[in-house]
Image (cartoon, rainbow over all chains, first blue to last red; front, side, top):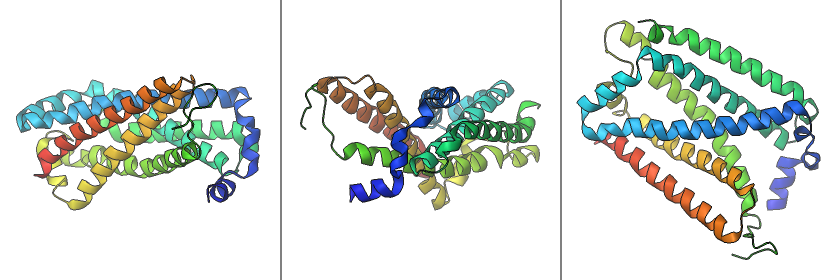
Length: 133
Length: 131
């Protein structure tokens, strides 16, 4: 069963693991790690902020008003960029796991970079009312 | 659990399933984070501009949203999936130092404890709006 699923999902080609040998692929891998660790750190901050609901609606609204200051709304743009990169590169890696696109792995790093930039630009545009208020 | 010659825990096929689950939870998170980001943080901007609410996220806004069962399911799924995916990612990084069995056990038990505790804190925070 495991062998079957492994064969279906991996194809044997992934064991060549070419994507860790070129520089751009190594950077993509390193950024995936760094963005992942940053997001875990943010996750615990996020749970901490939301858990102030325990102290009642007034406390919660006070804390939430503070973290929705335009300064933090601006920092949220960075958060969105980190999330988008991690998501797009994660999908890139899943394609390689299925044996798809490995030969184009380096070019696909740049596709991820462009998608991240476009997504971040769109999110920035949508966030403008939160930043300039 | 058996140990290999370097006194590391032997997982057998367990590592494969953990790897697969990391991929599936990642894909699930793409969907859940997208919905969460849009519904919680972007969609209410219009309400704020219309003067319906002071801020995008307030106690009342969250309470109203969690009155709909679908968002209870989505938020708990997001909390569980993001903690699993994030802490399993941290575990993958820590295990790359190839620690001995007792250290691996500390990593496993430590991360599970942290994950369950964080889930409990997050769940309690959500239940304030639901109950």
